[in-house]
Image 1: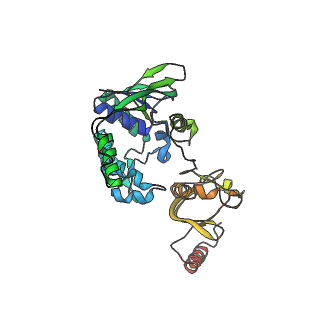
Image 2: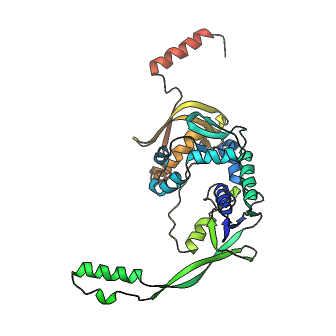
Image 3: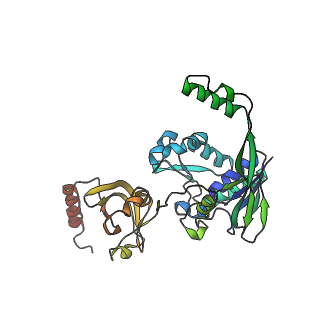
Length: 333
């Protein structure tokens, strides 16, 4: 049994904790907030869009970059596996338009409570108000014999076509310097020893929920390369002064086109809502994932968005419908 430390008690941290504990590891979840699942609580407008009830193959086109990286994850734990997990954990689910899966109660808190129950049932320990400052590692020297050197000699034979590599066969040990994770140091200076550390700190969005980019810092400190981050799945700001006056207005079955000059960058059809600073909603969040990196390269950092309020109608059909409504209620305001 290994002692596994999980940094972050969000969706990923809780799921990792459940399965690590079920596999008989000693699991400790370190969460800097006052409760688990703080970001889960606000997802899907507080309803929590758990997964999508589509075939696994349909998930990959929705990935913005490097979908092949997620092949093993998606096939190891499919959307159907996710649904089965929560149903068994006592959360009845429902499938809505677009195959979106929500708890029947429409309460994200039910998802969080189910994960907490499964953690406790599996024996995981939860530590709230516990922030990690550093992941600790130490150098380890390992001796490598036989296989590496035999492969080296075979490669030499292949390259030279002679017996040049024969003398290198057999047992020949060499030392390779590696590093081993030994635990974490908390912000108060406390050291917690562990055999493995899982970083599940989230990204850099919604800092008020605790996602302050700690994971990127940990990765850099461990010598890993971190790519530049860009906004994704976020609302969009607009500069027109009439938009705030529409705050709270929701639109359904609306067409959206985003252009950079004459070039169409994104098109979609669905739901959106006006806010005090711009636009949001499922369709807008999807758009942001497509245009995030392109926005910085646009002139003045601006793109143009066009809304089609009646995308199923031609201009002539729309004109006729409006005239009919005027004629049906000539005295209405």
